[in-house]
Length: 224
Image (cartoon, rainbow, N blue to C red; front, side, top):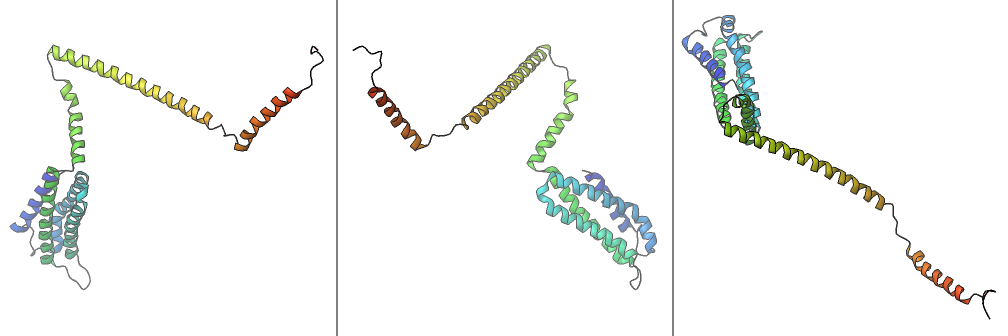
């Protein structure tokens, strides 16, 4: 977030309006010539600061957008009053009033930016902390440590790698188990319940068959 540059530019423009470097006695074209570079740069920096604030604290979006829009409006109004055409003549006095108003709005936006930078959202702060750790990883890896500590670190690294492999194997086994269970479930869905009437008739048929076998005529091979 370019807060420092934004603050410096606000101070420079304010100094120009109070010291007489930019005065309402100058022609509008001369006022714009002297102020254009700073005004253009301020508008660009304000947009950058706004985007940074929206990332750091999105829940403050309404306040951020409002203050940013007010500043941009005053800067646009400043230029508009200097280059009026037709019946409305340019008005350097009103234009400089708008520029001073823009400085006040810029100071308000600056205060909000400092507040948000000092207390970003918890989630964003955690991400920024991780980024700091990642950025410093290369530096930390170059710090010498006692041999005993280094050996412990190496041993811990080996144990962690082994644990990661065990977890990977367990995940693979669980995946295979899920696949097998899915297959069993698919097979079970192929079975259908036997209709109740049919199931009731079958024992009766079995009994009739047994009676028929009992009442059958003796075989010719039966002894008298």
